[in-house]
Amino acid sequence: MPKRLQYSISKLFFIKLLFILPLASPLIYFNTFNEAKAGLEFQWDDNPAYRKLKWYQTDSERRNRNTMYFFLRPSERKNGLLKIDMNFPKRFKTNLKTEKINLCKVNIGGFDSRTKCLENIPADFEINKEEGKTSLSIYPSSPLPSNKDSYAVVFKLFNPKRTGLYQFHSYGQSAGKIPVSRYIGSWTIVID
Image (cartoon, rainbow, N blue to C red):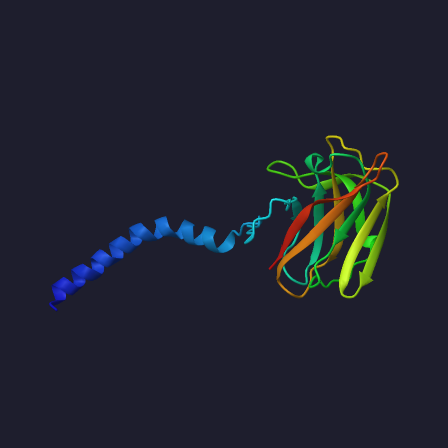
């Protein structure tokens, strides 16, 4: 290849690189450093009885300290709730203590506000561990009303060692003349 042609090709390559690199660098930066905090949820067998509930966690990395908010919004509470039961997945192995569990009236964060507890609701918590299954029973001192306020069950714990999707199921016993227990919904937590 003649020297003059080789020089013009390398010069043309350098000029193209100068114009393309500034345009491509923001795309590289945003794709590598900004991760989406929201989870994408799939269901292979779409069940109409399944209800997806909202949740929020401060850290999704395994073995890290985490605060998990399991929301009970007004649309999920048709009646007042006397009792809330939560079933944990079998593989969700973490040290859960009643001192680190809280029931509160919550402000669900968004674009301009943070998720935080506004008012603690006095409640009794009972952890049941039998045959590899863990469940939590929550007994509020007064029934959770079916008003416009949102409530949350808050856990402060360390994430488990295993990564994956963990599905928590909730059941509520309604306040009324005949207390009936019914399925409220499920939360699907992601641990990276």
